[in-house]
Image (tube, rainbow, N blue to C red; front, side, top):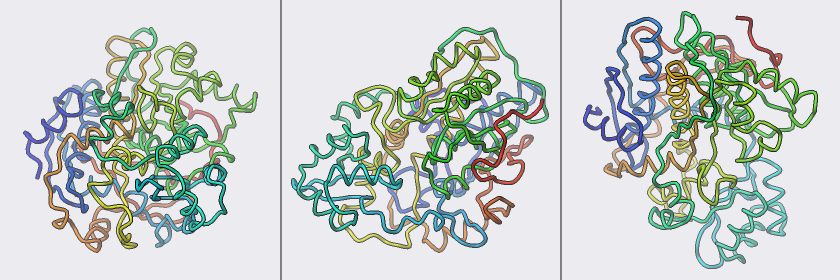
Length: 468
């Protein structure tokens, strides 16, 4: 069980202020086979979301509430996508990712390893072009073995692809990007425009009446808005048929949202997005830095069109340094930051039964939601438009700063993890079929989190706000 002293240490390492809310914890590390403080770190991030909700509820009602976090449940949250079942089958089987030619770790000519993530066809095709090889894993491995590791990293970065050399923590901190982000808090909050104070709208739930425009994909960004939906926000997710994504991640992060299609490269769709943006309280996006600015949706452009907006930016490597534009995913950050080497050695046989977890994706989503809640409080008190910045790299740096005190062999077995999932799960209807999903983790005495409505597939909703 995490003590209040340990909770304070973990929050101090994050760079955010310690909460006023009364929070208690049960359970604890190690849940997964890891020496890191995964359950306590994830639980602390969730407790900060709870504290932000508690602050908003206290402003609405004048009452504080009790917050309880089960750290075992919080740890499973990091495997939410891989635990999710659709009609009794594991949801990741919908993705058909068994024969990816360039996905994972590969050994280079200099003996170093490189992490490449190519779960989407455009990334696979681009990487194969750089390598000049046939579209199968053996050909890709042979081609990569002819490259010097850092030269291949540079070549893939130049082509807007995901490769990153496997490093330990010290090597990453000596890298310009690792060094640039090392002193940043896990959440950055910056005022980007003027606006009068904006009190929270009336409503029966903490975030009732708040509109969230969600332009994110995969896991971290969609987790921000899914968390806000748990507490009553009207979340409208915007995707497009041509944008690649994973069906399992869409099913996992789609709870409580409406899902519409808009292609912002079409003039009429761009006008529609601008109309939606003007009435949004929160504009959340996970495009690479500068991508939306080219289309007229930078933080400053959105704030000018919608004074008082809270703009959320989530990326891989951070918002400062030479890699702010670099593409990457949870697996790439694990490799770059030193986290992967704390869990496995490259080239070792993989355990096909081992439950995957995306610690950076899901924790970054929680920290992004916390940043939104902190910005809502500031907007109500002093006004302004606000920019919330989070990244997988900043989250990795925070996790690593908590230390590695645990024996991996003392973790839960794979069978016990699935038994725990059954204890912490619920059944719900969706457009995919019947879901067995993790329940919301936070336990709050007055404002229990809940997702309203069935989980929808992309494009099933109209691109419009619910009537107030």
